[in-house]
Image (cartoon, rainbow, N blue to C red; front, top):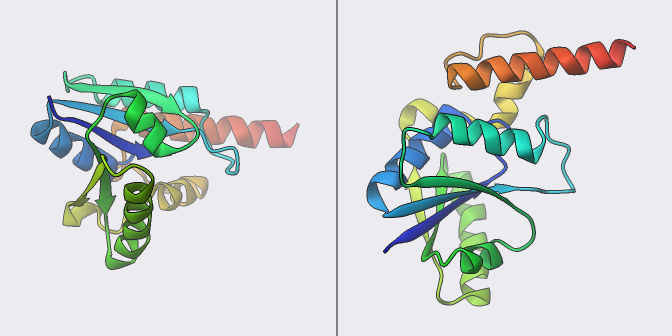
Length: 166
């Protein structure tokens, strides 16, 4: 059984992420979305919120599960008995960084391969950071996110704005 791990922060999960998840789900027997808990970053959503968002928007994919993880990606891959890491590429600049990570992971864990998937051209410019910036200025994010995720982003930003006014 071919098992893949698709890691990321998914803060929030975009339609570009969904493109990679759905394509991977068609290629692999089982896909584990690894939601990174990175203490060096301050995400908009908690890791639990991101896991729940991903579970909601991937519920139609029966071979996909979502887990939070911290630490080394290759350790998470081994713990889940996965064969490959899937990484999405938007532009050539992504490739340079992702290649370094893939080569490093290959040295640490020679039994784990990395597969690169180029995202759909519709999403080649899209990032979670850009979406959060647009939303922060009350811009329309409906073209970038699943409707339920877009609503959660707007609600979270309203909560943060209200908390800052106190």
